[in-house]
Image: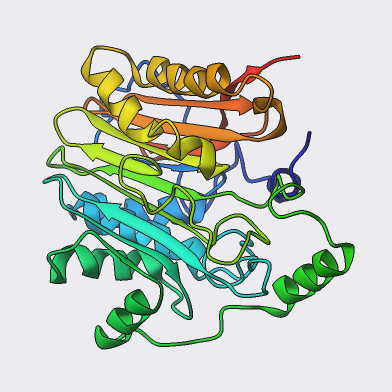
Length: 326
C-alpha cells in the first residue's frame, strides 16, 4: 500500500542530493557510526529542513534540547505538511487538535494534548516542562496556559485541509479506518557536542479522528523517550498500537540491555506484530532510535517508512527496513 505522503516525498526528489547547503557524503550503516558520529540529529520521514534547523544549533555548540525544539517547529509551521501543526488535517468535527512532547537529557519532560489554535505545540510542551511542576496539560487548560505564556491564538485550518475534510465528510467513511496515510508524526532526536540527548515529537494526529482522540505522540514512553545514559527513540504511525506496547520506552530499555538501535526497533515492531497478528497488515508503525554512541536504527511494519539523518555533515533521507516483505 503506497502512502500519499510517500508519493509527495518521492516527487520532491530530495534524497541523495545536496540540499539546503549541506554537502552529501557517503552514508554509513546505521549500526556503524562514523568516527565523528556526534553531534548528530535524526528525524522520522523526509524532514531535511527540520534537521537543517537542528544542525544549525548543535554545530554551533547549542543544546540538543534547543535543537529538537527548533527542528520540530519547522513542520509545525509548514501548511503543506498535512499531519503536523498549521495545515494539519482536522478531526471528524473539522477541528485541528495538536499533540506534542519534549524531553531533555536530565529526564525532564513536558507534553500537551488536544491543544487547539496554537501553531507550535512543541514549544508549549517545553514551557510545561520548564514553567510548571507538571508533565502534561490538555485541551482548554493547555490553551489557557499557552496564552498566558505569550503564544498567539490563530486559525490552524488551511483551505486545503478544510476541503479535504469536507470531501471526507461527504463520503461518510468510518473514524480512523480509511486514512492510513494521514498520521505521520514527526519525531526528532539529537545528540549535542557535550554528548547529551534530547527528543521531541509533534503531530496533528490521525486525520478525521473521533473528536477528543489523543494518540501516542504526547505520551512519554510511547511516542518518544530519552535516557541520557542509553539513547532515545520515537514513533510514528497509528498511535494506538504504539501506546499498547510503550514502544519508545521499550526500545530504550532493550538498548540498555545491549541491543543495537536497529535490533531494538525490530524487536519493538515484532511485539506489535505478535500481539495483533490479524491487524498489523492494515497499518503502519515506524520506530526510530539512536544510542549514546550515535548509532541509529529504524524499522517499520511495512514498506514506506523513511528517516532523515544528519551525521558527518551529511543530511540525507534513508529508507527504513520493514517487517512485512510479502
